Length: 342
Image 1 (tube, one colour):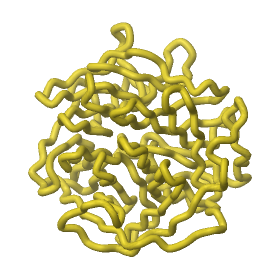
Image 2: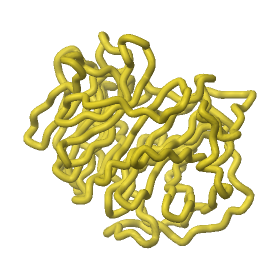
Image 3: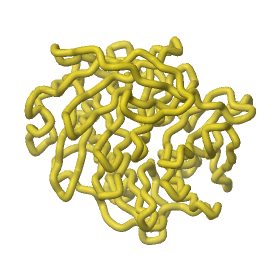
């Protein structure tokens, strides 16, 4: 359980735009849990519908797993002195990135597991990165994430290739942390950053050096976790009760749509998006699903009511100052997040 709830976000008030309408029906595929799993969370899905994620066994130990949706999974652990293994993304070749809790690391050992089973730490100048590795594409096993800079103590975004650090990711903003979480085949990045107040978060899309700041509402809690080649992104915001709420955002149209999973859970999070538009979703009831909007093929899935859809205020995602502020104000009252993860 420790690895799956280690990275918590502060809370804010959820306030959706006034113009809201009901979307068409969507579909959900319940993910078959690995054998012996007490809780399961799927973070990534590739175009072949191979998923990757983590599960907590009956002894409370977190293991990584991957495989097709029919449940024939392969389980793995980082090993060494690590205490938990959390895969966060899988590319179309089957390469996986993630992190492993370890007593010597603040967040975790960032790793790359290649499709042939080779497991290696992601390193900069021979030193293993401490942070979250998440996005990966098959082109040169290019990956992204964030790490704690040992010289400054600041969490900084980066790009790596074949498990070797290549460069920092800069948003050219004066912010506390920069946290890329996904990239697509065109090299476009998606993620979030935290303002200098240490609490307010905004999603971002970074394309060819051009930055878009993405706010799903005015709560100051927007997080983007996945992006595909068409810039369909997935993420979540948090309400005043500390519950995360998933959404999908289409950057081509500016349309947000909530993802409402009818499993009785008070909170849901959306993660990786493959190039077919299939999205990995988890709930804080310990369940995981693959979500498909009305125009996305999702075979053998149950139909569910479409979530609310809305558009961001015109220009809102593009207007910000050099501190990364978009006019969103941090709420006065905050609550601990219930089961939300960065």
